[in-house]
Length: 321
Image 1 (cartoon, rainbow, N blue to C red):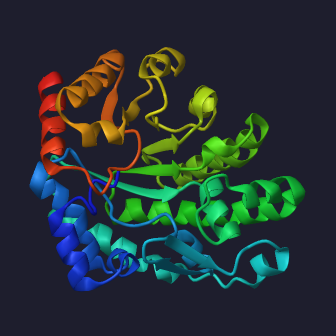
Image 2: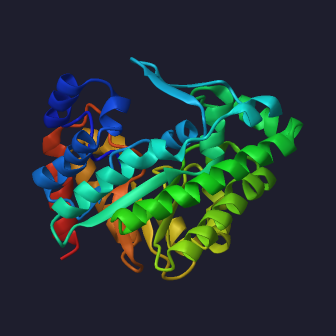
């Protein structure tokens, strides 16, 4: 996750030349170049589309921009039905993403898998409601309880847009897609069922209706004990797990033979040395009995040394031969 980004000097050089994050993400030439950078440097097994989960709210009619050093901002905040109904969707705003996909698909080595993605409805909704990221998602959680009809209407719009968005990514050339639910861990079990599991089911079913061979990875960060229900009920083809999940527990608790993606702590990657080797080995050992895509438990951090990424890759490749 975020294998293309600020820890790479070639990314920093391109960003300095081209401008801000959103400008890079919505410029097909630049976004394709950034997607390919870690493939050239590390020969990763999969290329991850360089984009952002908040392009969907932009297509739904919100203004999106990034404040330097602070992160994304969205306006107007969707905290009333009149605001939601006043948004003017423009699906064409996502066309640059599909152009990026076509460029990358044409340039990737045949052996390298191409992964697209979108944000899951609950996580996207939290940004649309608060106008920015928030650790406790208090405004979205209050709205979900206080005006569930408005929350449902917002989630419905995100679901429909996401199905179309992912289908068009697949049609343009990605081979699998991932749903990122970065804030799934903030919900109670009943709310998790309504705002995480149910919308994911609709996306998976809707996507397969359009693209029958679609491969979907679900990543409900922070789900913890709710992870087995997510895996059983959503219909996803694989489950990503974050670094707080015990991989041995996950292997024992998830459906047999369900592929798992994860879950090295990004801070172990920063630490390097024997601690990194030990952490890698624990993950590999826990999932030796099922299909496993080795990955971090969350995004690679900007101050990650490149030498440590090289150490990680050597350890994983050596341990999987």
